[in-house]
Length: 497
Image 1 (cartoon, rainbow, N blue to C red):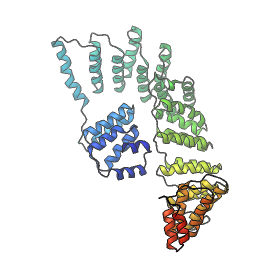
Image 2: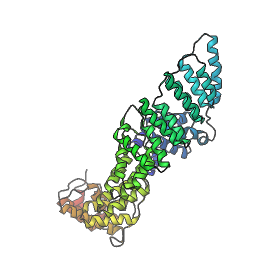
Image 3: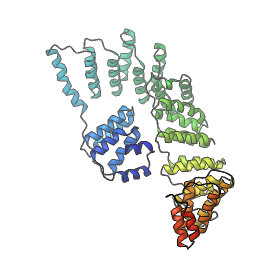
Protein backbone atom coordinates (compact mmCIF):
# COMPACT_ATOMS: atom_id res chain seq x y z
CA UNK A 1 0.00 0.00 0.00
CA UNK A 2 2.77 2.43 0.90
CA UNK A 3 4.47 1.83 -2.46
CA UNK A 4 1.30 2.75 -4.33
CA UNK A 5 0.73 5.84 -2.17
CA UNK A 6 4.33 7.02 -2.66
CA UNK A 7 4.11 6.58 -6.43
CA UNK A 8 0.79 8.33 -7.12
CA UNK A 9 -0.70 11.75 -6.21
CA UNK A 10 -3.52 11.45 -3.69
CA UNK A 11 -6.85 11.32 -5.50
CA UNK A 12 -10.20 9.52 -5.58
CA UNK A 13 -8.66 7.06 -8.05
CA UNK A 14 -5.90 6.22 -5.58
CA UNK A 15 -8.44 5.77 -2.78
CA UNK A 16 -10.39 3.37 -4.98
CA UNK A 17 -7.19 1.39 -5.69
CA UNK A 18 -6.42 1.20 -1.97
CA UNK A 19 -9.92 -0.12 -1.25
CA UNK A 20 -9.41 -2.86 -3.84
CA UNK A 21 -5.92 -3.67 -2.59
CA UNK A 22 -6.92 -4.00 1.05
CA UNK A 23 -10.68 -4.34 1.65
CA UNK A 24 -10.14 -4.84 5.40
CA UNK A 25 -7.55 -2.96 7.45
CA UNK A 26 -5.64 -4.41 10.37
CA UNK A 27 -3.81 -2.43 13.04
CA UNK A 28 -0.45 -3.79 11.84
CA UNK A 29 -1.17 -2.82 8.21
CA UNK A 30 -2.13 0.75 9.13
CA UNK A 31 0.87 1.34 11.43
CA UNK A 32 3.37 -0.17 9.00
CA UNK A 33 1.94 1.79 6.05
CA UNK A 34 2.11 5.06 8.01
CA UNK A 35 5.79 4.41 8.80
CA UNK A 36 6.64 3.67 5.12
CA UNK A 37 4.85 6.65 3.53
CA UNK A 38 7.50 9.17 2.54
CA UNK A 39 5.61 12.50 2.80
CA UNK A 40 3.64 13.70 5.85
CA UNK A 41 0.83 15.12 3.69
CA UNK A 42 0.15 11.71 2.18
CA UNK A 43 0.46 10.07 5.59
CA UNK A 44 -2.28 12.37 6.92
CA UNK A 45 -4.44 11.67 3.83
CA UNK A 46 -4.02 7.92 4.49
CA UNK A 47 -4.79 8.36 8.20
CA UNK A 48 -8.01 10.25 7.38
CA UNK A 49 -8.94 7.74 4.67
CA UNK A 50 -8.64 4.80 7.09
CA UNK A 51 -10.74 6.70 9.64
CA UNK A 52 -13.45 7.26 7.00
CA UNK A 53 -13.39 3.52 6.26
CA UNK A 54 -14.32 2.70 9.86
CA UNK A 55 -10.84 1.79 11.08
CA UNK A 56 -10.67 2.39 14.85
CA UNK A 57 -7.46 4.28 15.57
CA UNK A 58 -5.80 3.74 18.94
CA UNK A 59 -3.48 5.98 20.95
CA UNK A 60 -0.60 4.27 19.12
CA UNK A 61 -1.69 5.31 15.60
CA UNK A 62 -2.68 8.82 16.77
CA UNK A 63 0.70 9.45 18.33
CA UNK A 64 2.56 7.89 15.38
CA UNK A 65 0.78 10.34 13.06
CA UNK A 66 1.63 13.18 15.43
CA UNK A 67 5.27 12.09 15.45
CA UNK A 68 5.40 12.03 11.61
CA UNK A 69 4.06 15.58 11.36
CA UNK A 70 6.39 16.87 14.08
CA UNK A 71 9.47 15.13 12.71
CA UNK A 72 8.96 16.80 9.32
CA UNK A 73 8.47 20.24 10.92
CA UNK A 74 4.80 20.47 9.88
CA UNK A 75 4.16 22.16 13.19
CA UNK A 76 0.84 23.86 12.35
CA UNK A 77 -0.59 20.60 11.07
CA UNK A 78 0.82 18.78 14.12
CA UNK A 79 -0.78 21.26 16.51
CA UNK A 80 -4.16 21.10 14.74
CA UNK A 81 -3.98 17.31 14.68
CA UNK A 82 -3.09 17.20 18.39
CA UNK A 83 -6.07 19.32 19.39
CA UNK A 84 -8.38 17.26 17.15
CA UNK A 85 -7.50 13.92 18.79
CA UNK A 86 -10.24 13.97 21.49
CA UNK A 87 -12.91 14.73 18.86
CA UNK A 88 -11.53 12.30 16.26
CA UNK A 89 -11.40 9.48 18.83
CA UNK A 90 -14.78 10.38 20.38
CA UNK A 91 -13.04 10.85 23.71
CA UNK A 92 -11.30 7.46 23.65
CA UNK A 93 -7.82 9.03 23.54
CA UNK A 94 -7.11 11.69 26.17
CA UNK A 95 -4.46 14.40 26.29
CA UNK A 96 -2.58 14.91 29.56
CA UNK A 97 -3.32 18.22 31.33
CA UNK A 98 -0.04 20.24 31.24
CA UNK A 99 -0.87 22.17 34.40
CA UNK A 100 -1.24 18.93 36.36
CA UNK A 101 2.06 17.69 34.98
CA UNK A 102 3.84 20.81 36.29
CA UNK A 103 2.17 20.42 39.69
CA UNK A 104 3.48 16.85 39.81
CA UNK A 105 6.97 18.00 38.82
CA UNK A 106 7.32 20.69 41.52
CA UNK A 107 7.65 18.24 44.47
CA UNK A 108 10.51 16.47 42.67
CA UNK A 109 12.24 19.85 42.26
CA UNK A 110 11.91 20.50 46.01
CA UNK A 111 13.18 17.02 46.83
CA UNK A 112 16.46 17.75 45.03
CA UNK A 113 17.61 20.02 47.91
CA UNK A 114 16.93 17.31 50.51
CA UNK A 115 19.13 14.86 48.62
CA UNK A 116 21.80 17.54 48.06
CA UNK A 117 21.33 17.27 44.32
CA UNK A 118 21.97 20.77 42.96
CA UNK A 119 19.74 21.72 40.03
CA UNK A 120 21.49 22.98 36.90
CA UNK A 121 20.30 25.57 34.38
CA UNK A 122 18.58 22.87 32.29
CA UNK A 123 16.56 21.83 35.36
CA UNK A 124 15.37 25.38 35.90
CA UNK A 125 14.65 25.85 32.20
CA UNK A 126 12.48 22.73 32.18
CA UNK A 127 10.57 23.95 35.22
CA UNK A 128 10.15 27.48 33.82
CA UNK A 129 8.91 26.09 30.50
CA UNK A 130 6.34 23.88 32.24
CA UNK A 131 5.11 26.78 34.42
CA UNK A 132 4.75 29.09 31.42
CA UNK A 133 2.89 26.45 29.42
CA UNK A 134 0.59 25.96 32.40
CA UNK A 135 -0.13 29.71 32.52
CA UNK A 136 1.82 30.26 35.75
CA UNK A 137 4.12 32.94 34.35
CA UNK A 138 4.46 34.92 37.59
CA UNK A 139 5.70 31.85 39.48
CA UNK A 140 8.12 31.12 36.62
CA UNK A 141 9.47 34.67 36.85
CA UNK A 142 9.97 34.32 40.60
CA UNK A 143 11.83 31.04 40.05
CA UNK A 144 14.28 32.86 37.74
CA UNK A 145 14.83 35.66 40.27
CA UNK A 146 15.64 33.32 43.15
CA UNK A 147 17.47 30.51 41.42
CA UNK A 148 21.04 31.62 42.24
CA UNK A 149 22.27 30.44 38.84
CA UNK A 150 23.03 32.57 35.80
CA UNK A 151 20.13 32.18 33.34
CA UNK A 152 20.94 31.41 29.71
CA UNK A 153 19.20 32.48 26.48
CA UNK A 154 16.72 29.61 26.72
CA UNK A 155 15.66 30.73 30.19
CA UNK A 156 15.03 34.30 29.09
CA UNK A 157 13.31 33.36 25.83
CA UNK A 158 11.02 30.93 27.66
CA UNK A 159 9.88 33.49 30.23
CA UNK A 160 9.51 36.20 27.56
CA UNK A 161 7.34 33.87 25.49
CA UNK A 162 5.22 33.12 28.54
CA UNK A 163 4.81 36.84 29.37
CA UNK A 164 3.85 37.59 25.75
CA UNK A 165 1.25 34.82 25.81
CA UNK A 166 -0.14 36.38 29.00
CA UNK A 167 -0.24 39.82 27.33
CA UNK A 168 2.25 41.37 29.78
CA UNK A 169 4.23 43.26 27.14
CA UNK A 170 5.32 46.07 29.46
CA UNK A 171 6.98 43.47 31.69
CA UNK A 172 8.75 42.02 28.65
CA UNK A 173 10.00 45.47 27.68
CA UNK A 174 11.30 45.97 31.22
CA UNK A 175 13.16 42.63 31.13
CA UNK A 176 14.64 43.37 27.71
CA UNK A 177 15.91 46.78 28.78
CA UNK A 178 17.35 45.27 31.96
CA UNK A 179 19.14 42.55 30.02
CA UNK A 180 20.66 44.97 27.51
CA UNK A 181 21.69 47.44 30.22
CA UNK A 182 23.10 44.80 32.56
CA UNK A 183 25.05 43.03 29.85
CA UNK A 184 24.14 39.56 31.18
CA UNK A 185 22.33 38.55 28.04
CA UNK A 186 21.89 40.06 24.56
CA UNK A 187 18.43 39.29 23.15
CA UNK A 188 18.63 37.06 20.05
CA UNK A 189 16.43 36.75 16.95
CA UNK A 190 14.03 34.39 18.75
CA UNK A 191 13.58 36.92 21.57
CA UNK A 192 12.71 39.76 19.22
CA UNK A 193 10.47 37.60 17.02
CA UNK A 194 8.40 36.64 20.07
CA UNK A 195 8.15 40.27 21.19
CA UNK A 196 7.35 41.67 17.71
CA UNK A 197 4.72 39.00 17.07
CA UNK A 198 3.03 39.70 20.42
CA UNK A 199 2.86 43.45 19.68
CA UNK A 200 1.49 42.91 16.18
CA UNK A 201 -1.14 40.44 17.42
CA UNK A 202 -2.18 42.99 20.05
CA UNK A 203 -2.54 45.71 17.38
CA UNK A 204 0.54 47.65 18.58
CA UNK A 205 2.31 47.63 15.23
CA UNK A 206 4.39 50.75 15.92
CA UNK A 207 5.86 49.09 19.02
CA UNK A 208 6.67 46.02 16.94
CA UNK A 209 8.39 48.23 14.38
CA UNK A 210 10.44 49.91 17.12
CA UNK A 211 11.59 46.49 18.29
CA UNK A 212 12.53 45.63 14.68
CA UNK A 213 14.62 48.81 14.42
CA UNK A 214 16.30 48.00 17.74
CA UNK A 215 17.46 44.68 16.31
CA UNK A 216 19.70 46.58 13.87
CA UNK A 217 21.17 48.72 16.64
CA UNK A 218 22.07 45.62 18.65
CA UNK A 219 23.39 43.75 15.63
CA UNK A 220 20.70 41.06 15.85
CA UNK A 221 19.99 39.64 12.38
CA UNK A 222 16.27 39.30 11.50
CA UNK A 223 15.13 36.04 9.87
CA UNK A 224 12.17 35.08 7.68
CA UNK A 225 9.82 34.93 10.69
CA UNK A 226 10.67 38.53 11.61
CA UNK A 227 9.80 39.79 8.13
CA UNK A 228 6.71 37.63 7.70
CA UNK A 229 5.11 38.97 10.91
CA UNK A 230 5.74 42.60 9.92
CA UNK A 231 4.68 42.14 6.28
CA UNK A 232 1.49 40.36 7.34
CA UNK A 233 0.64 43.15 9.81
CA UNK A 234 1.30 45.87 7.22
CA UNK A 235 -0.97 44.07 4.75
CA UNK A 236 -3.71 43.98 7.39
CA UNK A 237 -3.26 47.74 7.82
CA UNK A 238 -3.38 48.15 4.00
CA UNK A 239 0.07 49.75 4.11
CA UNK A 240 1.34 47.92 1.03
CA UNK A 241 4.04 50.49 0.23
CA UNK A 242 5.91 49.82 3.50
CA UNK A 243 5.20 46.10 3.18
CA UNK A 244 6.81 46.11 -0.28
CA UNK A 245 9.93 47.81 1.09
CA UNK A 246 10.37 44.99 3.59
CA UNK A 247 9.53 42.43 0.90
CA UNK A 248 12.25 43.82 -1.39
CA UNK A 249 14.75 43.84 1.47
CA UNK A 250 13.89 40.21 2.21
CA UNK A 251 14.45 39.20 -1.43
CA UNK A 252 17.68 41.18 -1.91
CA UNK A 253 19.34 39.77 1.21
CA UNK A 254 18.39 36.15 0.35
CA UNK A 255 17.20 35.74 3.94
CA UNK A 256 14.80 32.97 2.92
CA UNK A 257 17.72 30.86 1.68
CA UNK A 258 19.78 31.21 4.87
CA UNK A 259 19.98 27.87 6.67
CA UNK A 260 20.79 29.66 9.93
CA UNK A 261 17.27 31.05 10.25
CA UNK A 262 14.05 29.22 11.02
CA UNK A 263 12.26 27.35 8.26
CA UNK A 264 9.95 29.86 6.52
CA UNK A 265 6.18 29.41 6.33
CA UNK A 266 4.93 30.13 2.82
CA UNK A 267 1.41 30.84 4.11
CA UNK A 268 2.74 33.81 6.12
CA UNK A 269 3.58 35.65 2.89
CA UNK A 270 0.36 34.82 1.06
CA UNK A 271 -1.40 38.15 1.92
CA UNK A 272 1.38 40.05 0.14
CA UNK A 273 1.40 37.60 -2.78
CA UNK A 274 -2.33 38.32 -3.16
CA UNK A 275 -1.62 42.07 -3.25
CA UNK A 276 1.10 41.73 -5.92
CA UNK A 277 -1.05 39.42 -8.07
CA UNK A 278 -4.02 41.80 -7.85
CA UNK A 279 -1.63 44.57 -8.90
CA UNK A 280 -0.50 42.65 -12.00
CA UNK A 281 2.93 41.73 -10.63
CA UNK A 282 2.76 37.97 -10.32
CA UNK A 283 6.31 37.56 -11.65
CA UNK A 284 7.69 39.54 -8.71
CA UNK A 285 5.68 37.43 -6.27
CA UNK A 286 6.94 34.24 -7.92
CA UNK A 287 10.60 35.23 -7.51
CA UNK A 288 10.24 35.22 -3.72
CA UNK A 289 7.87 32.25 -3.82
CA UNK A 290 10.55 30.16 -5.55
CA UNK A 291 13.00 31.06 -2.79
CA UNK A 292 10.41 29.88 -0.27
CA UNK A 293 9.99 26.62 -2.19
CA UNK A 294 13.63 25.71 -1.51
CA UNK A 295 13.32 25.81 2.29
CA UNK A 296 9.81 26.81 3.29
CA UNK A 297 6.86 24.84 4.57
CA UNK A 298 4.64 24.69 1.47
CA UNK A 299 1.11 26.08 1.25
CA UNK A 300 -1.40 25.08 -1.49
CA UNK A 301 -3.27 28.40 -1.32
CA UNK A 302 -0.09 30.29 -2.27
CA UNK A 303 0.23 28.17 -5.43
CA UNK A 304 -3.35 29.07 -6.30
CA UNK A 305 -2.75 32.79 -5.68
CA UNK A 306 0.16 32.83 -8.14
CA UNK A 307 -1.42 30.55 -10.77
CA UNK A 308 -4.62 32.62 -10.90
CA UNK A 309 -2.47 35.78 -10.91
CA UNK A 310 -0.48 34.56 -13.93
CA UNK A 311 -3.71 33.66 -15.72
CA UNK A 312 -5.12 37.17 -15.17
CA UNK A 313 -1.95 38.59 -16.71
CA UNK A 314 -1.99 36.17 -19.66
CA UNK A 315 1.13 34.26 -18.54
CA UNK A 316 -0.51 30.86 -18.87
CA UNK A 317 2.76 28.95 -19.47
CA UNK A 318 4.13 30.30 -16.16
CA UNK A 319 0.90 29.21 -14.46
CA UNK A 320 1.22 25.74 -15.99
CA UNK A 321 4.82 25.45 -14.70
CA UNK A 322 3.61 26.18 -11.16
CA UNK A 323 0.81 23.65 -11.58
CA UNK A 324 3.41 20.97 -12.41
CA UNK A 325 5.46 21.92 -9.33
CA UNK A 326 2.34 21.80 -7.19
CA UNK A 327 1.51 18.27 -8.35
CA UNK A 328 5.09 17.13 -7.72
CA UNK A 329 4.63 18.15 -4.08
CA UNK A 330 1.45 16.02 -3.87
CA UNK A 331 -0.93 18.99 -3.63
CA UNK A 332 -4.17 18.67 -5.60
CA UNK A 333 -5.10 21.82 -7.59
CA UNK A 334 -8.77 22.78 -7.45
CA UNK A 335 -11.20 23.07 -10.37
CA UNK A 336 -10.85 26.86 -10.69
CA UNK A 337 -7.10 26.61 -11.23
CA UNK A 338 -7.46 23.97 -13.95
CA UNK A 339 -10.29 25.76 -15.76
CA UNK A 340 -8.44 29.10 -15.69
CA UNK A 341 -5.38 27.48 -17.27
CA UNK A 342 -7.26 25.44 -19.89
CA UNK A 343 -9.46 28.37 -20.97
CA UNK A 344 -6.46 30.72 -21.09
CA UNK A 345 -4.27 28.33 -23.07
CA UNK A 346 -7.07 27.85 -25.59
CA UNK A 347 -7.49 31.63 -25.96
CA UNK A 348 -3.76 31.89 -26.55
CA UNK A 349 -3.92 29.18 -29.22
CA UNK A 350 -1.96 26.45 -27.42
CA UNK A 351 -4.21 23.35 -27.53
CA UNK A 352 -1.23 21.03 -26.88
CA UNK A 353 -0.54 22.50 -23.43
CA UNK A 354 -4.30 22.75 -22.83
CA UNK A 355 -4.59 19.00 -23.51
CA UNK A 356 -1.73 18.28 -21.08
CA UNK A 357 -3.51 20.37 -18.42
CA UNK A 358 -6.75 18.52 -19.15
CA UNK A 359 -5.05 15.15 -18.60
CA UNK A 360 -3.67 16.35 -15.24
CA UNK A 361 -7.14 17.64 -14.37
CA UNK A 362 -8.61 14.18 -14.84
CA UNK A 363 -5.86 12.59 -12.73
CA UNK A 364 -6.79 15.03 -9.95
CA UNK A 365 -10.35 13.60 -10.06
CA UNK A 366 -11.91 16.74 -11.61
CA UNK A 367 -14.30 16.25 -14.53
CA UNK A 368 -14.02 18.97 -17.18
CA UNK A 369 -17.06 20.22 -19.09
CA UNK A 370 -17.85 18.32 -22.30
CA UNK A 371 -17.45 21.61 -24.17
CA UNK A 372 -13.84 21.79 -22.95
CA UNK A 373 -13.02 18.41 -24.53
CA UNK A 374 -14.71 19.50 -27.73
CA UNK A 375 -12.95 22.87 -28.02
CA UNK A 376 -9.50 21.30 -27.47
CA UNK A 377 -10.21 18.51 -29.97
CA UNK A 378 -11.43 21.02 -32.59
CA UNK A 379 -8.30 23.14 -32.14
CA UNK A 380 -6.01 20.10 -32.40
CA UNK A 381 -7.72 18.95 -35.62
CA UNK A 382 -7.56 22.44 -37.14
CA UNK A 383 -3.81 22.66 -36.42
CA UNK A 384 -3.20 19.22 -37.93
CA UNK A 385 -2.14 17.51 -34.68
CA UNK A 386 -3.49 14.11 -35.70
CA UNK A 387 -1.65 12.03 -33.10
CA UNK A 388 -2.69 14.31 -30.24
CA UNK A 389 -6.26 14.41 -31.58
CA UNK A 390 -6.44 10.63 -31.65
CA UNK A 391 -5.13 10.45 -28.10
CA UNK A 392 -7.82 12.86 -26.93
CA UNK A 393 -10.56 10.94 -28.75
CA UNK A 394 -9.45 7.74 -26.99
CA UNK A 395 -9.42 9.57 -23.68
CA UNK A 396 -12.99 10.70 -24.33
CA UNK A 397 -14.01 7.15 -25.14
CA UNK A 398 -12.44 5.85 -21.93
CA UNK A 399 -14.22 8.53 -19.89
CA UNK A 400 -17.54 8.08 -21.75
CA UNK A 401 -17.50 11.74 -22.78
CA UNK A 402 -20.01 12.45 -25.56
CA UNK A 403 -18.56 14.49 -28.40
CA UNK A 404 -20.28 17.42 -30.10
CA UNK A 405 -22.70 16.39 -32.86
CA UNK A 406 -20.56 18.19 -35.47
CA UNK A 407 -17.60 15.91 -34.77
CA UNK A 408 -19.39 12.60 -34.27
CA UNK A 409 -22.83 11.21 -33.59
CA UNK A 410 -22.01 7.91 -31.89
CA UNK A 411 -19.24 5.66 -30.65
CA UNK A 412 -18.68 4.16 -34.11
CA UNK A 413 -18.15 7.59 -35.58
CA UNK A 414 -15.65 8.42 -32.83
CA UNK A 415 -13.69 5.27 -33.60
CA UNK A 416 -13.66 6.02 -37.31
CA UNK A 417 -12.42 9.55 -36.52
CA UNK A 418 -9.65 8.10 -34.37
CA UNK A 419 -8.72 5.61 -37.12
CA UNK A 420 -8.52 8.37 -39.73
CA UNK A 421 -6.38 10.54 -37.48
CA UNK A 422 -3.97 7.69 -36.82
CA UNK A 423 -3.72 6.90 -40.56
CA UNK A 424 -3.04 10.58 -41.22
CA UNK A 425 -0.22 10.45 -38.66
CA UNK A 426 1.27 7.41 -40.42
CA UNK A 427 1.16 9.18 -43.79
CA UNK A 428 3.11 12.08 -42.26
CA UNK A 429 5.66 9.59 -40.83
CA UNK A 430 4.66 10.40 -37.25
CA UNK A 431 5.12 7.80 -34.54
CA UNK A 432 1.84 6.27 -33.40
CA UNK A 433 1.16 4.50 -30.11
CA UNK A 434 0.61 0.76 -30.70
CA UNK A 435 -1.65 0.52 -27.64
CA UNK A 436 -3.88 3.32 -28.98
CA UNK A 437 -4.08 1.53 -32.35
CA UNK A 438 -4.98 -1.71 -30.61
CA UNK A 439 -7.75 0.03 -28.63
CA UNK A 440 -9.23 1.51 -31.83
CA UNK A 441 -9.22 -1.89 -33.62
CA UNK A 442 -10.82 -3.64 -30.62
CA UNK A 443 -13.43 -0.86 -30.40
CA UNK A 444 -14.28 -1.15 -34.10
CA UNK A 445 -14.74 -4.91 -33.73
CA UNK A 446 -17.06 -4.38 -30.77
CA UNK A 447 -19.04 -1.81 -32.79
CA UNK A 448 -19.42 -4.35 -35.63
CA UNK A 449 -17.18 -2.32 -37.95
CA UNK A 450 -15.01 -5.31 -38.79
CA UNK A 451 -14.09 -4.18 -42.33
CA UNK A 452 -12.74 -0.89 -41.01
CA UNK A 453 -10.90 -2.73 -38.22
CA UNK A 454 -9.21 -5.18 -40.62
CA UNK A 455 -8.43 -2.42 -43.13
CA UNK A 456 -6.77 -0.37 -40.40
CA UNK A 457 -4.72 -3.36 -39.24
CA UNK A 458 -3.61 -4.05 -42.83
CA UNK A 459 -2.53 -0.41 -43.20
CA UNK A 460 -0.49 -0.68 -40.01
CA UNK A 461 1.33 -3.73 -41.38
CA UNK A 462 1.86 -1.95 -44.70
CA UNK A 463 3.51 0.95 -42.83
CA UNK A 464 5.93 -1.41 -41.14
CA UNK A 465 4.32 -1.69 -37.70
CA UNK A 466 5.01 -5.33 -36.88
CA UNK A 467 4.59 -5.15 -33.08
CA UNK A 468 2.06 -7.78 -31.90
CA UNK A 469 -1.17 -6.06 -30.89
CA UNK A 470 -3.38 -7.14 -27.99
CA UNK A 471 -6.48 -6.76 -30.19
CA UNK A 472 -5.63 -9.56 -32.67
CA UNK A 473 -7.70 -12.19 -30.92
CA UNK A 474 -10.79 -9.92 -31.02
CA UNK A 475 -10.14 -9.15 -34.70
CA UNK A 476 -9.76 -12.82 -35.65
CA UNK A 477 -12.94 -13.81 -33.75
CA UNK A 478 -14.94 -10.99 -35.36
CA UNK A 479 -13.76 -11.98 -38.85
CA UNK A 480 -14.65 -15.64 -38.22
CA UNK A 481 -18.10 -14.59 -36.96
CA UNK A 482 -18.72 -12.82 -40.27
CA UNK A 483 -17.50 -15.86 -42.28
CA UNK A 484 -14.35 -14.14 -43.51
CA UNK A 485 -12.08 -17.13 -42.98
CA UNK A 486 -9.20 -15.98 -45.22
CA UNK A 487 -8.81 -12.68 -43.40
CA UNK A 488 -9.20 -14.50 -40.06
CA UNK A 489 -6.41 -16.93 -41.03
CA UNK A 490 -4.24 -13.96 -42.15
CA UNK A 491 -4.61 -12.42 -38.69
CA UNK A 492 -4.14 -15.75 -36.86
CA UNK A 493 -0.74 -16.30 -38.51
CA UNK A 494 0.47 -13.03 -36.99
CA UNK A 495 -0.78 -13.73 -33.47
CA UNK A 496 1.88 -14.51 -30.83
CA UNK A 497 2.08 -18.21 -30.00
